[in-house]
Length: 79
Image (cartoon, rainbow, N blue to C red; front, side):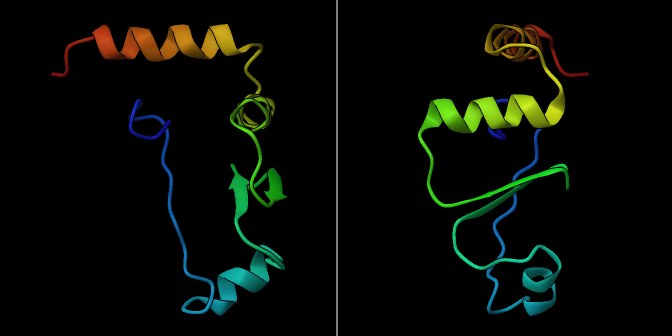
C-alpha cells in the first residue's frame, strides 16, 4: 500500500538492532504490525484480513472508499 500512496508509510525494523523499539511495542513474535500506534497484530495474515485491520485503524468505512481514494491520488498530477 505504501507504494501506492504517499499518505501511507511503511517501515521494517530489525528488533535485534533496536531492542528499545521491540520493548516499546511489546514484540514477542514476528512479523509484528503496528498501525498508527493504535492497532497491532502479530503474525502473517491473509491480505483481506490485513486490509480490514488497516481500515479499522484509520477509520475508513470500506475497502471501496480506500480504493477510490488511492485511485484519485494516482490520477492527480504531482506539483
